[in-house]
Length: 171
Image (cartoon, rainbow, N blue to C red; front, side, top):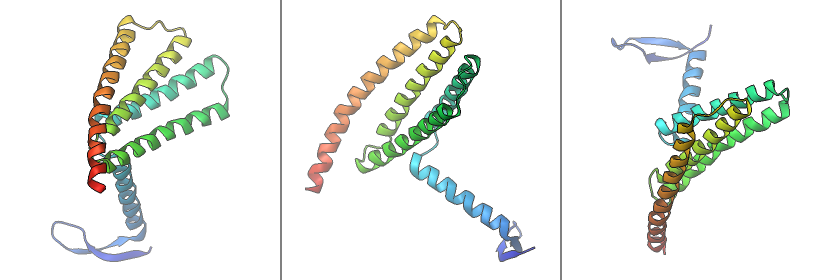
């Protein structure tokens, strides 16, 4: 059993050898968490909602494919790649927000748009399974879409002004 350097491991500040595997796992976990926070910003309720609707959309799509007897591994893999690309888009939005110095506004709007798309897809999957959609859900999505469009318009105006100010600063 290989061990690595002596480190302080308790409240009593006693030195203890740490197994190499433990040290490697801790380091890998730290690097993974740092990368996630760097790419996606803080993991707030918006990101949790996005992750939730992505999983629900994939599962409802899988159920639909099974029940319609159209299960295809290449279509499923394409869906997984699509979901992965959603997170790439969020990472790009975080980077753009940082470059343009507009905070999380671009990130949040991007997440809202992706959530909206996923919600529509979930409802399409459910309706194709023969599930009658409640009117309140359809109405709520329409309101969400309308509010999202208004927010996007306001953010475009504000971000455009901030963008122009930033360009003037660098000239």
